[in-house]
Image (cartoon, rainbow, N blue to C red; front, side, top):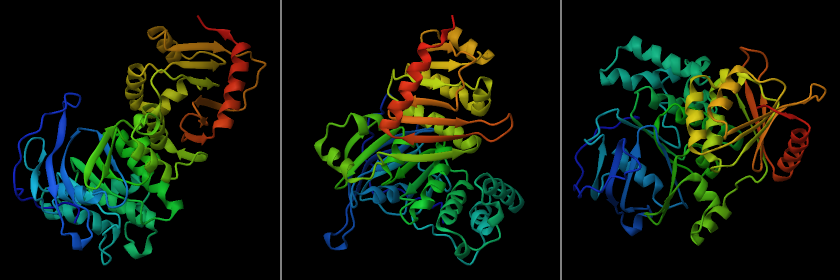
Length: 408
């Protein structure tokens, strides 16, 4: 099952101070201790304390045997703790408050996808079967599995099974979602289909605690990264600092052992993925680092961002990310932003004789090509991580910039 029944922990430790940076705490782990006999070969955890705020995503990374899965299982109530306490909004969690997604799916093979999803909500007595089916159908359609609702798990691909497992967890409407190495059992070509689901959930404010070996994914989705080793919390940092400001020699060596894809092409299609990508890249961007944009799409870009543009603008202002933008004409939305934040928005008009082949922007060693089509079409972005290519695109931007006229 996705949800678990809770019992009081073996020992309640003294409350730890609340991190003043995270005032809206939803999950609090206080001095969690779990030890196994040496003969079992299982990793334990030693007095780990952390807090998760509403809408926050925290990723647990570290070598195999570091205690990531053990910690998640203790939080879920699937493992008893030797000492410590798990609190949800200051109290003991109730059934369905916290759900767990396993790395090996744990779907019932004798039940259809739909039955796998609706069983827990119906058994909880919180909703009728018709309500549970309606919500399950909504989630299945949203994550492109509605056509598989009557299929049995054995007839699904690995990526489809894992998406079904995530939907089953979401069907209970949890306050906190726990995910344990959810891509470890997947073929490489299926990984992105699952990770994109998590990116969308992160964008929408689902509180999540994730154990993962996918470091690139962790830097895209996480608000904080916690490095565990030998059952201990060795470091807590932002994704940016974890990768680019790392000073711990042990963690530097760990990062070197992972495939971080120094050259990679990723495609994100549809409104959900478009919005999640734009927000995720902004989260990873260094404070004060400019976005150099060629071929502004005007109000169409804002249309594609929808209600999430407010979150994007708020974060961009907080991080002082300038827009240096080349356009053929200034849209109403662009003009409004330029006048409200003149120091963060520098626009220039390109000569009409200059034909630009693509709408793109450059951030560091990443080139983002944006595809909008006509109003109502599904947008898409192509992300290319290649330092040499990014330099070429940046040089082309600089050339166009010199030939364009400033908008005042």
